[in-house]
Length: 307
Image (cartoon, rainbow, N blue to C red; front, side, top):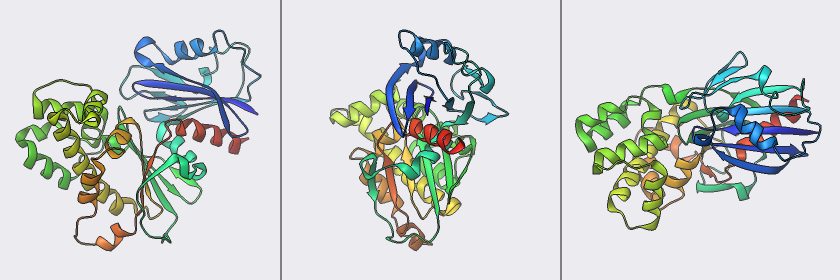
């Protein structure tokens, strides 16, 4: 069967057709150029002959309840009953609306070694069947996998753990009070806010990461290195909260920019530091999902399993 899948983030939307486990006609749209998700779908369908679809599955960066959702960082609203309306000739097909981290949770069992970057190996034999996906993009969230079950969360809106808040205050003083939730710090927007405090310059998170990668900006280096250290401390907290002995899997553009760079060493230094229950930490693998289309694969996998 062929289904249409979409991954709607705060900055970009990706749309593709999925059939027999393969994604085709994958297209990325910059959200700033559109007033709604319906406009994005209309642009995707325009000039393209769509096959008879068996369903639509849309993953959004925001809470989903009762078949409705709203983007956390953009005033876009979604209703599962109306998702297929912009697609010509596709009226009445099944449509599902899910959180984007839930989509990544469904993708995780099918990811190959080529789609994963191993940050640390962990134990050869995991002591439970729990894994965690943590997404750092425009926003932040997590998703727990327990066996074949995917457990939703909205951890981005939870308060920043004390250990991270104290370390942040030690580094930037009273300005740390502006980072009250996990998403305030661990996201592209958080990177931008931290850089402004450290340097006095207002920059986009993606530009800060690009400058750090080229090695020519000491202020960008200070921002990314500090964020990597704080993320390492935060990952320790995630271990104790979820016991993900099958691994923590980071995803999203901000995560790839930080952990796919030399700042990985700072992350590992903070994560692997000695302390109480260090043996728990030693056993946890940490991986980076390198494929930015993984959420689309997860949405397609969910539709196939539902069928």
